[in-house]
Length: 472
Ligand code: UDP
Image (cartoon, rainbow, N blue to C red; front, side, top):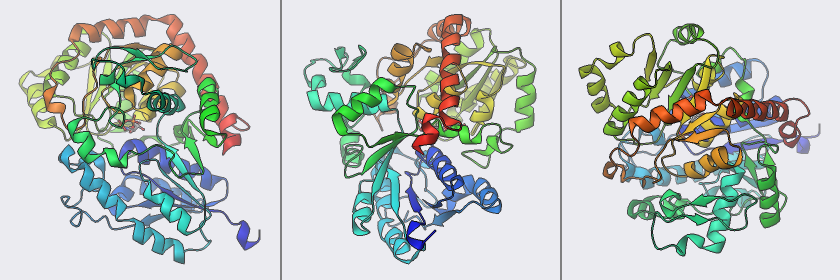
């Protein structure tokens, strides 16, 4: 090809697992199609996925990492704080976004010097300054929205209609106008950009500008058959430039390094984990995880612990390190909890090989906080879900799973936590509710059948000549 035909895509993720993981998968996928891909990262973030990238490079892929020093000190962050999941306090979110913003200059310098010349930027929706970079270089910027198209459309219609401002009470339900399905929400379930808490408005809000601002189009980690009606709605409202190219996690499926995807260091020996799973019948085990950023109070985690124990079903539960995890561990120790559940339950403190676990045949249900990656990974694995949204877009995603696709049962609270104010919330979900929802989902054959049907569509979409493949 002539020089001008050599495509070079520059990918700029938001540095948190739920946004970085799918962007890295996307980069690896695009590079497999023969284009040059540069993923902007920092030294500590690169450690999380460099083995995968090194392997890709060794097998001829034109993918590379641009490791930029992260200006922690300049932005008032503790040293080594290069990812939102290690932020010692939510109060520092603003500093974190400022630090990412400071990467604009070194990125521009790179783009001036690199060959082949960059042809397009694909950047996280929360980094509006990347549009200025694209303009400067006269190339398009595609926004990557780490959520469902359903969520994008719901947010758009709520913003447009201001329906949420017509209710007097935070917990009074309203119907989102103009949607193909009847979707009810309350103000207390809306993300910060639609219903800012005191901290949200100070810290995050100005970064959370409309998802596709200044972008040429939108790339979504979903597939057309999953939410066709909502993609149509998006096109009606904003035009045709939307591409669903997921489930992106599928590019790791069945590969030997699937466990490492997302983090080089998993907190359990994967052979032990698989061995444990092998000992259970098909569809019998519950996998529970509330994500990488949620700050659920220890008192609520204890309630969940007892719920899982009382459910009389085998389970794997991953509990994130960091936020008050020592308090919870103390309880586990005092109560001899791991001994109590021995043989039946497996706790993973830290990082679980989630994709590997979800793909195991003995997993029969997924208790999830409804972060979009978890949802789409659960969908691709054909799993019915027990939904426990906490904040951000999670209540929207839950509605898609429970009300539209009907492959999940709600267990979680009706009230979203406000970013940075999590201390205010105590036990919002009782152990009996956990048991009840698990029973319904694990015993619900119709729901399982539907979940498997949706998984077939997901895998077809991602495979050769499928809709996502063609969109790539
Ligand atoms: N993840 C994982 N192991 C863990 C926790 C999370 O592999 O122990 C991955 C998970 O598979 C998903 C991502 O991290 O790809 C989390 O993104 P999601 O959107 O589900 O939730 P968030 O953490 O952003 O709220």
